[in-house]
Image 1 (spheres, rainbow, N blue to C red):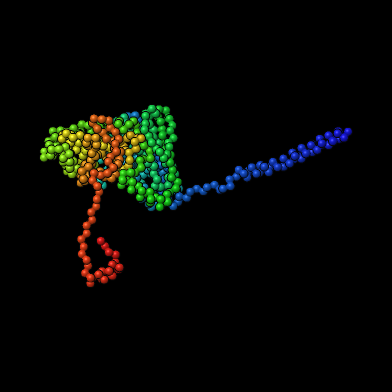
Image 2: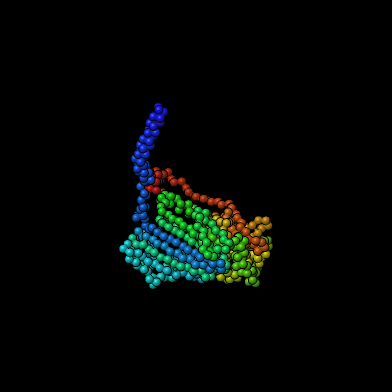
Length: 476
């Protein structure tokens, strides 16, 4: 009996406990939901939108799209949207410049328009476009087909948004069947979005490099598309910016600027690049009867090979003016040696061609060496676009003598700092082209001599001179 009563009491207790437990859980459930809501609510306020009102300009969008074909032809489209917020911005973008190479490409300006704060649109008419030679052809001894289309932007005012777009079409590639391209992103303003897109035939082997920014690579039908996206939401502090500018000036003086941020090339090797250039200058360097006669005249009083080399080098280096000439393929292909001889002027590749032709007539071999005076050659991306200069290399037994005829007045075999200890593409006639490093040191030791002549001031003037020196800053 006692057991039955106890069992009934126990069962009743369990039922009551279950009832109250369910009530307790039901009462707590809203509390748990409320706590869950509070737990999901951010403890920090959402970040505020950056204030760019004090910036001279804000580049809201900047895009470049390049399309290459297997035959080397290409198209390029550039478009931008820029908010003008200062007089400096008005000065910078009041006249737009669209550069192009007249003999190999054309440029069409799709639109230039101003958007007011109230939504009104002011379009710049085609009459505002002026076609003129590039500024470098007016400021330096440089003859070229580089031209610029200038557009005076109509109605541009503070607070406006400027939009423009240009289309370039290259129908005459410098190297048929090949293409190359280099690009640097802008870093001198607030840029909300900057995009570079390069489209190439899908099955075309390529060399490309962009170490600081990786592209998105997609395939669209028979094409492969590389897309790089960048932005610069903050400006560098003035001290950091000034330090970087000073560093770049130092690097530029020593020829050590950083390579472009994006490089792409269809050339598979440096040997292929060298053979292409060699084919451009091969016939033009061969000595003619006129060249042989001039070489005999220059070396008639000397017997050994070293003296012949110096006599011909001095003649080409000092008697021929440096004038840049770049029309179409003339950016890479030199004039013939006899043309340079008769013109009495030429650029680096022209002067090398004359030097090599005269030396060949005197029985001395000379090789062209493509080099950069601006930055180190990146060996991973073989491309003619990496070079901006050409010098000469003379084999001397197991060694090589490097000379530059464009210096005009300089010691024999002297290379400026920007050309020393640099990789160059040397192109011999009897072997494969290859990268070689130029000499580290100049052929002679640098020295500086300072001389001064003076006499002691008489004793009666010393006190007066001392008093005057305290009152004024002496000038020397």
